[in-house]
Amino acid sequence: MKAREKRLVMVLVGMTVLGLSGWLVFNALGNNLSYFFSPSEIAEGKAPQDHVFRLGGLVVPNSLQRGEGVDVHFVVTDNAKSIDVLYSGILPDLFMEGQGVIAQGKIRADGTFVADEVLAKHDENYMPPEVADALEQAHQKGVTGAAN
Image (cartoon, rainbow, N blue to C red; front, top):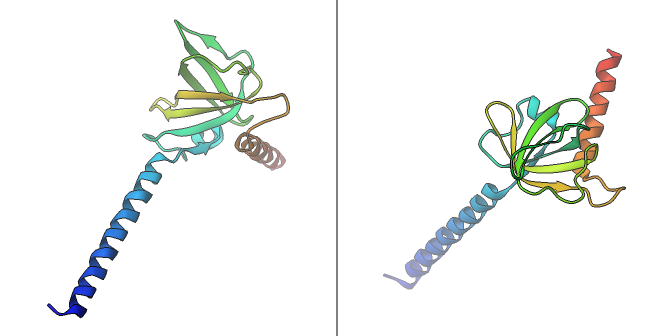
């Protein structure tokens, strides 16, 4: 084999290894992404069925129900649509009804969101940007829909 052919083979092998490595990295990153959806987007069927994602909105006042042990049920809304949430764990200290929340988990076939993690706002002036945007969009749709 000539030196030129050896270099060509080495370049091809290197490019193949580099391409395979890049594909593995992007595939791993894609599987670990957690997208955000509002209750309205979930009601419209935009949320993935068997994939972890984040649900954000406001906790509906008087919707918090405690079950046995650390099981809780509450409702999250964007003031247009609402989603029932089940969570088994200790809620954050700042979790309150009427306040912003983001829950991470999966949606069941019956439309109930089963949360693995619940995050609450961290002070009285803060609302996660995703939640604020979803509430604003739901409000705009409601105003536009009411005008028609």
